[in-house]
Image (cartoon, rainbow, N blue to C red):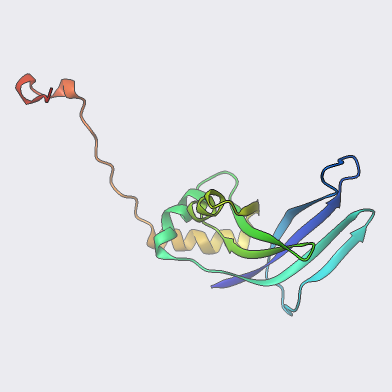
Length: 153
């Protein structure tokens, strides 16, 4: 298991009469020494950023295909599930699996993604190499390949 730091950003949206602010994931960083509590790191002209340290990232065997799908793309991502708490977006979970992130989104959770840092890419890549074996796909022969008497009508 590793831990990462997540940076969330709040932007004011003065031109939008229905929504006064937008929260979004800015980035995921390899954990820096020191950890600590969440803290505001930027506060400039309607934009603020919060750093959330020490969020765990674990790799699980049953997610190996999801990790493979992620690291085999041109743009590997880190997925963060976050929720609003007391007027602030708070990251709750971090995953490197496409499949897990998809399940979160299917459940109606707020999930954003950021580029995967090289340290995490190397870590999950080694894990995929050691633990992922694609399932062999069975070819389904078209009915026209069967003898006429073997075709089910």
